[in-house]
Amino acid sequence: MKVITKAYGPVNVDKRQKILFPDGLFGFESLRHYVMLDAEQQPFFWLQSIESAATAFIMVSPFLFMPDYELNVSDDELADIGLSSPEKALVFSIVTIPVDGGPMTANLQGPIVINRDTRMGKQIILSDPRWKTRHDVINEIAVNAANFSDTDSEKKALC
Image 1 (spheres, rainbow, N blue to C red):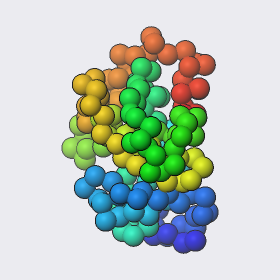
Image 2 (tube, helix red, strand yellow; image 1 turned 120 degrees about the vertical axis):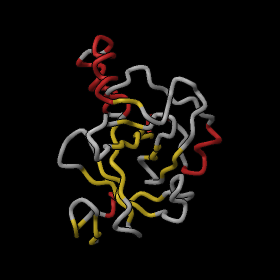
Image 3 (tube, rainbow, N blue to C red; image 1 turned 90 degrees about the horizontal axis):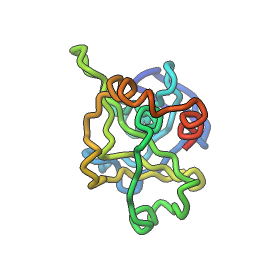
Image 4 (cartoon, helix red, strand yellow; image 1 turned 30 degrees about the vertical axis):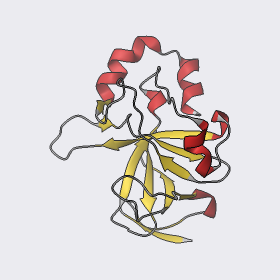
């Protein structure tokens, strides 16, 4: 399937890269069909709308820079995407890279959760006061570097 992307122009994608967001994303509720693409720079990904080439989001696993990140959500909140166990979940944070050279930030308050099996996703809002919409990624890596071991970061990157 061919998709017009914001970052790469027209690309062929496998149907397994398609993600359905039944409720859309906050602020983009009318856009429900996306594809997930590897970004040129790892460990980032693009979440590209199929319905709007101009709508794409950079994402990263929050576990890569925030070792104590956790999602305290009820099973009911994720039932509509068929998620019944945490092992089936992929969790991402939307990243903002300001054009003015400001710090790259990640939204830990509104993570994207994707069910690996159903390929359905949902953006949720966490009420935990530790998680904000603009966490400075580079600063968090520096602050939390002592909390990581190679094994821990590899395990969490697979989540």
